[in-house]
Image (cartoon, rainbow, N blue to C red; front, side, top):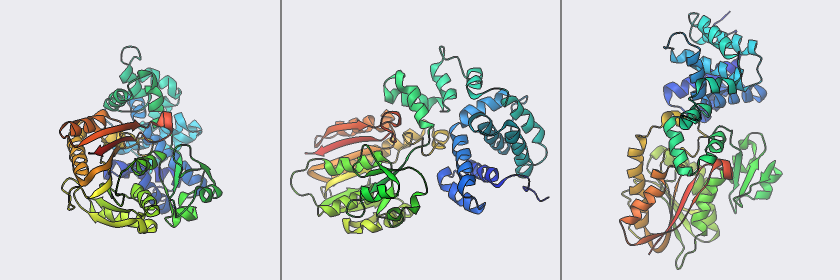
Length: 435
């Protein structure tokens, strides 16, 4: 029997995605389609792999604490831990019989690692199978009363510093558990009907349900979004309602005088730029889409092709030192690079990659981008600053710091969206006017 023959393709595929995430810093949602194709998985098998991968990564912190509690020796090879995490998820969160979860995990280790760790794999997973998830959390998490942050970190599988940062941004301990739980729930697949190119009715006819926050949003109940004709043709796209509201905040802000030139400073990969271009075309405006990285600028070109009539161009440039003159634009969007802690439902691996030190680099960049965006906008024009992060240092902290240093702009309002309240990514939106 050839190596790997005893392991079903779904579990092999899941293991390969986890390996890519660990070794190559891949994002699971990007690596998964390639691996599914490679293993020739579709239908129920592909759905099983998808749940196994996403659930394992989301609950990695909790599962590691449980695995460590079952080890007799503290050191464990990373490639064995990957297989154990997959096994624990099957035991504690999926409807997989214990014997099947354990035996297939042993076979997986034998196929991908070797015979040596198979005994350890069997022993650890048998210990894990003795109790349910809630019992294990109570056993391995810090005391809830003495260390509520530590307990929440293990119970909801978030790094401690992330729990602290989200709690500070939320401003109320009463909702923290609900927020962390929402981060661990699979997000809805939301589509955007780009106006003038597609319609909400068309997407509803393709199997969707009208959204609740954006007038262009449709929730896809199931199936592959790329199978929807409007999505395949670029007339519609996959876009969270929170991201749609960012673009709408810019477009719907009142404006006196000229309204012809719009700017998207950080446009990659192009979702917001496509919506802005579709909206601009309807009212005789044009959007300049700028992106600092050339490969992401190519994604913008591809993603905005159907809405090209609303674009004045796609350029690769440094938004902090732009090639255009000051005061050029009537409306400017700064969807700034950020920690991404508002999209943990969508990219769960981000919680394990980000560190507090990342903010030391991101926050100065965010400030520089916002300052440049304000200068790029004409007096009377409007600027929207947005991040897919609710962390205060990246949101109100940036806006306050930038506006404190200049007398030609003022804050008109902010909005913070939340997964547990709004069903969206935790987008922050600030509307600023230059005067």
